Length: 60
Image (cartoon, rainbow, N blue to C red):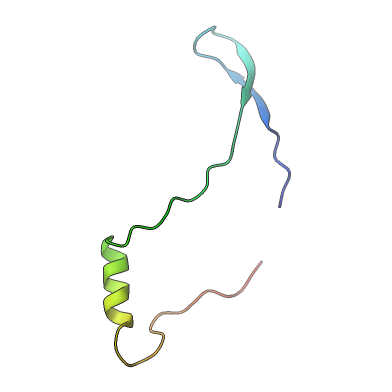
């Protein structure tokens, strides 16, 4: 993991000057079971035939 600063001096719309602001990194939301791609993938995976799409395993 990379260390990221918890605060950052950026422009404040309210007071019109640069002030320290708290910053966070957003996490990925939970995947929907009913998204078109997921429905298609599940349909393709069902039954015989094994894994149908490549699973990315190579790290940096």
